[in-house]
Image (cartoon, rainbow, N blue to C red):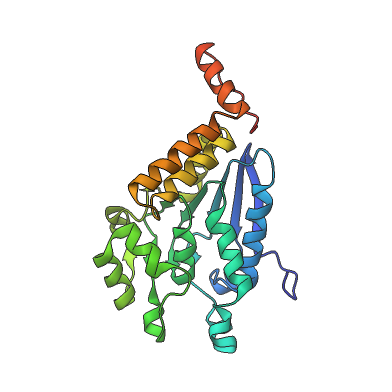
Length: 259
């Protein structure tokens, strides 16, 4: 916690199995400083260890999801503001969690905020959303993953244009490029609906499915298929898999216990 002991991440559970994490630094347009990232990682880590937590929604304010990384930290601490072991470890917690992450994006989603949104597994955006990597305008480049993740999301040429010009794209363009899943007038509400659909299922199966899909970004097809085979074999060792199959044949709703 920072010196003011301010809770930079607001946490609530709007429905069973769903956690809502809201970025809470409105006076700085939710600019991500190291303490904010640390608090977010701590919330995700706690959720991952909590039985029954099956989906997490990350949202911001109506006019800004996040304006980016904290430029005051960069001015005061230089590269150490971005490249330090604690920050890298905290980003890794968010990037590697088995719990599905859903970004609800309204308004500005720039720089580090955009990089955070790209760590999520599903992205719902409002028509007002704007996405950008403006670091080039400050004389440097993205440092929290955009040069690697953005081309994987929207292709080399569109990513090059965004990163090398620093100019943002609107929500309609983001949807066309495949950066977001869908547009919704109330992005947070729709993200919570999607989270509730996920939360009907076993956290074991959700985590194994997420792991297999993410492997497709890193592995060749043959290795990815092997990961899928491994994960479905693991799924078949769980009580929830047996419950799901029994519920199907008994024509009833499955009651998953995350075991």
